[in-house]
Length: 94
Image (cartoon, rainbow, N blue to C red; front, side, top):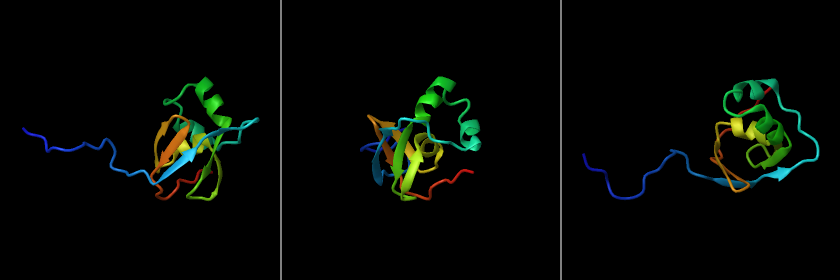
């Protein structure tokens, strides 16, 4: 079997937005559905730290907790204090 020359894409999504992550003094309230969906992905200590991080979502045009961003279907990766976002429909949690 021979692979085609060129670069292989690990994700099928293209990055549309590069969003900076910033620290908040107090933790942002996160819906319980988000914390339950991420239960096996991150430890409790890590999730506590991520609750104090925020981003300005370019899709919803408002501030969101990083945990909500992390659970969104448009989230691609987090790299060096920046979120790579596909810019598709944002997942809203209640």
